[in-house]
Amino acid sequence: MRILSWNCNGGFRNKLHLVADFNADVLVIQECEDPINGPPIYYEWADQYVWAGRNKAKGLGIFAKNGLTLLPLEWEDAGTALFLPVEVSGGMQIVGVWTQASASSRDSYIGQFWHYFQLNRSQFGMKTLICGDFNSNSRWDKPRRLWNHTRCVSELESLGYKSLYHQLTGESQGAETQPTFYLHRNLGKDYHIDYAFAHSSLITGEAINLTIGNPDTWLRHSDHMPLIFEL
Image (cartoon, rainbow, N blue to C red; front, side, top):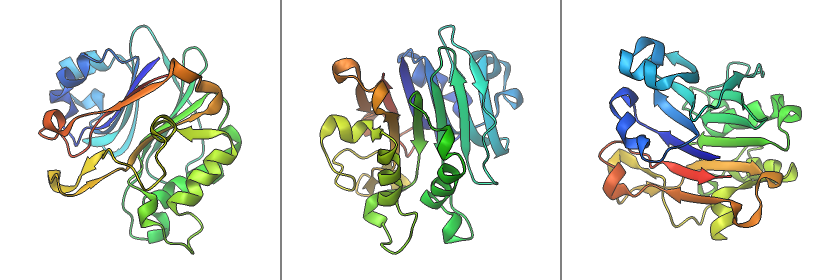
């Protein structure tokens, strides 16, 4: 199964051609508009999809292609933004992630994922994939904070989850050499804040790969680079 995860930086209806060549089976798109409010070409392209958001112009969408179907899962979120769990035909679960800023640091970015993960810890199984824009990196850890990035990664690892990028490159969290985000689209302000975590049972040797989009191609379209990977 080929999966593409990308924070498209809005206006996804005008960027459909950019993802077409990847022939992804599932697309997890952050900052996309709700297809039902988009032009016919976008709604027809979306076909099998689940979308969530507080703003119809910028939410989180998961799109299934190549004959796959999606079933939305009723997981608790306690108002945290923004998580979208679905089951893909065949049994795999995908949890789309787009963490955001909040008035309270406790509920911002990686803190949102921490609280969501604790609420649904028992739901994360051996066929679960977690991917999207976490807006986080262990370089920004606050050591005394229970829900910092390193602690979240450790919690995931305790349940058998691995970051595909770090598994394939051998790099440590916080020492990534390939950015996924360029602040203000500035090449000098590069960060690694987008991730895909899969249960070890889904990771079988050479059966996985992951690539990150090249800024020469993608930076004109978004400040985030897409992650394209196969399981």
